[in-house]
Each structure stands twice: as C-alpha cells, then as structure tokens.
Length: 126
Image (tube, rainbow, N blue to C red; front, side):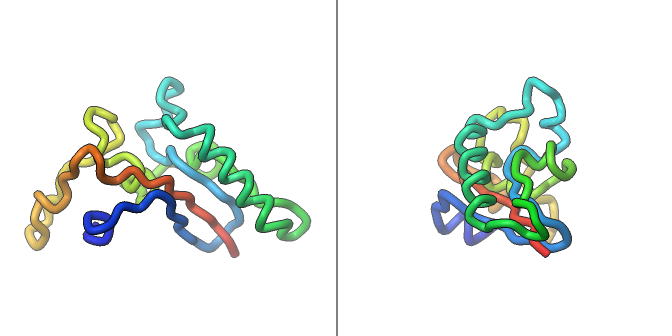
C-alpha cells in the first residue's frame, strides 16, 4: 500500500506460479454481472495481454492463454490487480473499505481519485 501511495505507477505485472496465463481486470466477484464484465480499459488491456503472450512464445506447444481474470481463471475478493486499478474510483463498485486492522491507520487505505490507476497484469507461469 505505501509504495502505491508514494509513487504513480502506470503499468505493473504480478507474477504467480502454478499454471500459464496472462490476465487482467476484472478478477472480482462484483464483475460477474454481465453489465460490469469489462473495465473501461478493457480493449487496451486485451491488446497488451495478447502482445505479452506472443512475446513469451510457446510453452509446451501453446501460447499462454490471455484475457480477463474472471474469464480465464476465477474471481477473488480483494485481488491486488483490481485494487491497484480501481480502488480510488468514486462509486465504481470496485473500490474497497478502509482497512480496519488496529495496527494500520484507516486513512492510509483511503484514496484520492487520481491514485491507484495501474494497468496491472497477472502473469501465471510455471
């Protein structure tokens, strides 16, 4: 959280292991509704994830699948990729409540509208 508060990131990649894919927002339960399936930057995220898949080349005879997290893997609650992309959006339905842990100040998890606008991709690789 603090690194995102101190810097303006435009593009990020989160690496995980266990399967092979390149995914992007939305990956949240609230986006399972067909009217909310695509993010405002869906077209550009689709183009970038396609390019990443092509650049990576084939793994075990196939290119990495790419697309929205909800379409390729499964939705989660509180995923970093959606948080980094939309937590500062007023009335987006994709933001989150301030942190309620006693050791972390809630005001450090409340954001201005210009913060947290990162195109954040999840790359699963094994």
